[in-house]
Image (cartoon, rainbow, N blue to C red; front, top):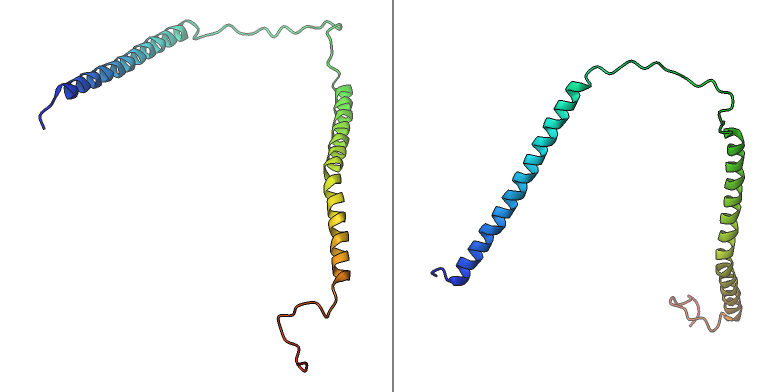
Length: 129
């Protein structure tokens, strides 16, 4: 089948998309090279940093984070959260328990109403005919 106008049009679009992809790759490569060059240049300037003098503050009015009282607060919050979870579990289980109790009562009533003579048997009892 000879190439038609639509084939030529699609081929030109494909070449355009390929050119765009290669252009983006070239742009990413160029930006990467510039960034690498800048990173190498800045490391030459700071190759030997100044020594630290470790100047500590000896001011007694510096605020202290009282971690001990925070630990007690965390414990109180954890106990309260545990109690909330327990209460929620009980509230979610209550409808199921009520339905289960009703089922057990209906099942017991059904078992009490079943008479041995009316129960269908799949196996014949020997000796009886």
